[in-house]
Amino acid sequence: MATVKDSIPHIIRTAEDPRQEGIWTARLSKIEHVNSKIRLLRLSLQRDGPRLHHLPGQYIDLYIPNIDVVGGFTITSPPQSSSQSQDDPHIELAVQSSPSNPPAAYLWRPAQEILNSTVTFRVGGNFVYPPPTLSQEGCQKLDRVVFVAGGVGINPIMSMISALDVLGADKAGGMTRTVRVLYASRRDKKNDETGSAEEEILFEKRLKDIAEKWKNHDRVDFKYTLFVTSGESGTERTKEDEVEDGNMATRYRRITHDDLFEALGPEGGRDHTVVYVCGLPAMTDEFVALLAKAPGMEERRVLCEKWW
Image (cartoon, rainbow, N blue to C red):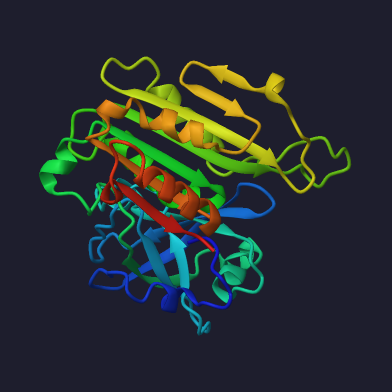
């Protein structure tokens, strides 16, 4: 993930997770600032190197020269981006500033110090789409997918949604008949002289673009709701400030249980529904317990991952 709990190193916390065979080499080819706390980094792969077949939602164990701690960062790009048929096969990471985490601190050094540096990584994790808890037949019958993310918990879910988007509505693993995205994040103000400009939320624009693409589609009902919570210096807003535009909405509050039940759809139509939840442990535990016991649902169709 983009952050790790300092007292539990990533490699220990995920020791029981499956890992793919092989180690890949990549070049840090691009750095883009999303806001004052999060960077997007592109790791370009060797065109003549081993092929990478990661699944949407997986993470990497990142090995940085001269740093003993192994970094754990979620791949935020879809698997299609790493294909060697691309002009620049790569994976993308969203890394939150964390000075006490040596791998994250390295990736937050001044760009000129780390651009074009070489790193190696392994791929792991089982919080993936399509859901490994269902049979192949069960995955093929899915007609509703609900994604629930809090903060940088959007990282694996962004990879999943992007993969669905690229595959489209007519391929296995692509868009299902109904897709609901519930994303809660705080928005801080920029630390500038005016104090009035607001910072961008991670993947805010990317999700809007995908929602716009699937707006009014004849076979896919896609809806994206951003829940903006007040940041460290953010301004409280009210229901009157909320915006709804076609298949996109902005709410100035936290995600409620009613929001989750609405995303699940009618009780009688939940047989082929799957839910992905990723965020802080408190949010994840609460939502997973609620969703797994919701009428028409079952535990194996509610998947979760916690970020620390």
